[in-house]
Length: 179
Image (tube, rainbow, N blue to C red; front, side, top):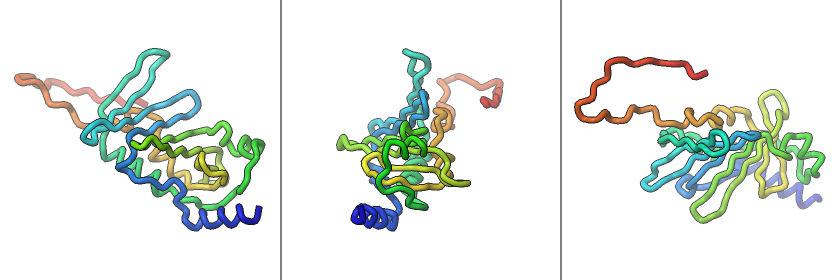
């Protein structure tokens, strides 16, 4: 137990427990309860957003590479603020909201390897329980992560209008607040 605690303390000193190379990520799955979206990298670094609507229908959008880049940077730079538990048992994981996790972010790499971040309940005011699925340690991380990890596919959608067909003109534009 003393060796595990020493390893956990060393890991906390490193702070970035989800470290990965952005160029190796080919898809991101964000799940919260029964809701799920998938961000998938296609050829030439183009990203698509996929959302399941109902049981059968899948909707997809072209994704904004800057928004995806910001998401990956935020995930890569997520740091442990506090070390909370070194060897949590099932009861601990249930009470922290990590079993089942309130939110899961799965990063799939081109090599087939994956990194999974489990996000749980609030630890304190602006801190959340979190852990990497592969490591036993539970940490507290800043809730600012939730600003980048959004479960709305329109958040990731490219915000540019597609080129119009030759001869087409725009006569009216309507803006709607989707919220």
